[in-house]
Length: 125
Image (tube, rainbow, N blue to C red; front, top):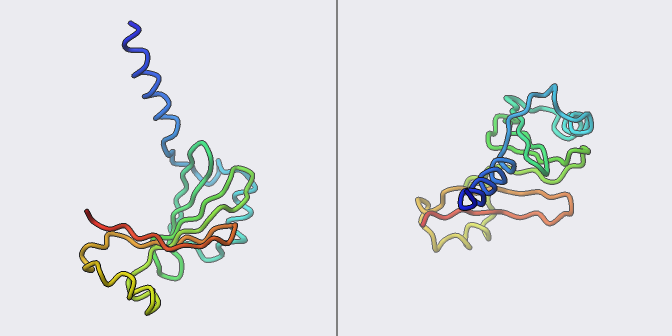
C-alpha cells in the first residue's frame, strides 16, 4: 500500500497546479476592475486560473495571442502578446538570422509590472 502513496500524492499535487477555466462571474472583483481598466478593447476573452494567478486570453485590435496575468488581489503581473518576425526591430531580426524562419515556433513579447520587459523566442529542436 505504501508504494502507491507517493505516486498518488504526486498526482494530486500536479492536479492542483493545473489550470482551471473560470467564468467571468467567478473572478475576484479586483481582477475584473483592473482588467477593465487595463484592457479596454478585448474580444473573445476566456479566463483560467491556477494556484498563483488568474489569466485572460483574448484578441484586441484584431491581434490574437494576447494574455494578461493577475494575482487574486487584482494586481497586474504581466501581459503577453504573440509576435511575428515583422514586429521585430532590424537589430532583433539580425539576432535571429542564425535560425531559419521554420525553426522559430513562437515569439512572445512579455511586458511585466517590474518593467523587465522581454521577448521570448521558442525554437524548434
